[in-house]
Length: 308
Ligand code: NAP
Ligand code: GLV
Image 1 (spheres, rainbow, N blue to C red):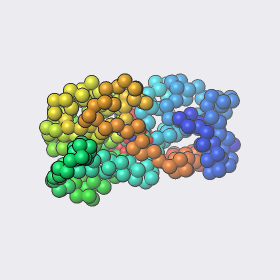
Image 2 (spheres, rainbow, N blue to C red):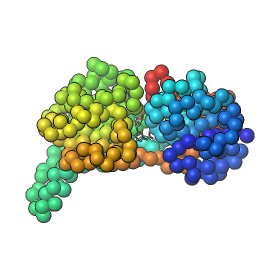
Image 3 (cartoon, rainbow, N blue to C red):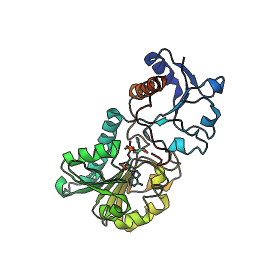
Image 4 (tube, rainbow, N blue to C red):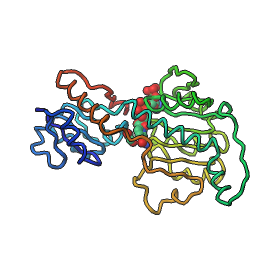
């Protein structure tokens, strides 16, 4: 009977779900895992450093989320054990909804409208056509690609930036470090959907902001570590940026006394842009375990050397 160790942020509901989907699975919530040598698979979000290395017979690691930075942050990850992550239309659809909402929030000038109606005034700010609004999407993978396509389908003038060149219908694609400056120069609304890796850490910084059109808005739905937080408020206060919609933060929950809470140009959501359905996520894990038990590789494995 395969044994799965859980170390999520909400272990309780998972046990029944896994047992329903794979009755032969023995599910053990950390720290009550019994003999570590009996654990075959791990389902984790932010495992304590060394936990995975303490499981000598581990055959597969499954990320609770789409991102794996929280797993790779452990310097003792057992080498050679496949790490699979959430890639699913449900996850992509939820992220796309959120990104379209956040882009429309700025495109349709919602922060200004809320201020006007807050004064009970009847001024009408005009909005350019979507075709005249240049949106830039950083990261064109499962989530960035889906969001970029949806924004293009709404008529926005969309460009995307990735590590390697690719073709995406309706999206102008820039790639690699050479493509970054021209990509930024045209991005009035910049949406970040990169994975957090050694290369992308701190990429939303003062230099990047300086490369955007004056008064650009940024939307960060990827990871808090992408943003150099100390660079943001000066950029907003000087008018270099006109708004920041942040779903992720370097410390979560965002501390009570953090200056972002009170800044009039910062919009905050509590890391909820895309939380895929539990049944979908459990289904991916069960599928991955079945594949490994048959001697196959799970779907959606990351390359630890690349960090995503
Ligand atoms: P993905 O499929 O792995 O796509 C990553 C994209 O980023 C790829 O297009 C990749 O380029 C590009 N990229 C990676 N390193 C790069 C670099 N150094 N320079 C330029 N481009 C680079 O990831 P995903 O599934 O779309 O997820 C993206 C991230 O979203 C996750 O890692 C996670 O942090 C975040 N997320 C947040 C939430 C939330 O609720 N806020 C929910 C889910 C996920 P190539 O195509 O050339 O490889
Ligand atoms: C959430 O942030 C995820 O990585 O799925």
